[in-house]
Image 1 (cartoon, one colour):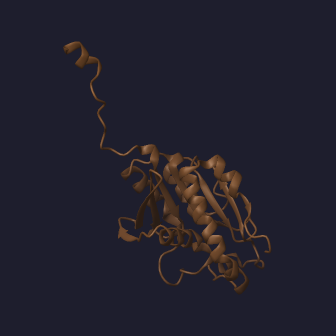
Image 2 (cartoon, helix red, strand yellow):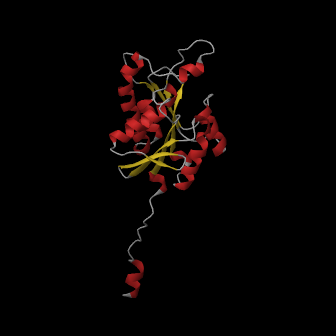
Image 3 (cartoon, rainbow, N blue to C red):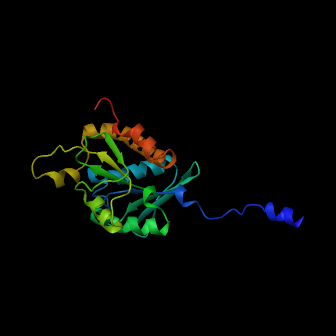
Length: 212
């Protein structure tokens, strides 16, 4: 009987959550109503749309506003840093360490001038591409080996007008397509956590609206 008990002990189930099933989704932007509807704040916009779809809400916490939801056994932690765009890395590093989330389970959402409006580009790693928020994250983490989702805003501005453009609000044509694009962006984030980055890249990379 003792021998039987030795070989047939029930497995111990840990109360700790599997770290590979936790994801930190970071939307880049600047806090305050002045920036709310600007192109540079598309990261915040995507997370706001995703939180609404998942019926969760943000609360103010250390270095940012945070919302959490669970889907298909995965935990998604949504972070909107309150450090302003150029210091985003501080918030990312803090929450990554606090929640014990590996770099491959981080997804950073940013605007991108080098991509046409309405085009998505998901990558497993890469350079900052001139984006100050990504540049600071690279510096704080000490590398650039983390997934990022670039939301194309195009580069429809004159010489010397880049800052005005990215900190400017969406025009009427862009606003017409934005709800559909935000919906698809939210689905991309969920797919990243459930289907994996490879499958998600295959499904979502490229132009998202046919009649743009």
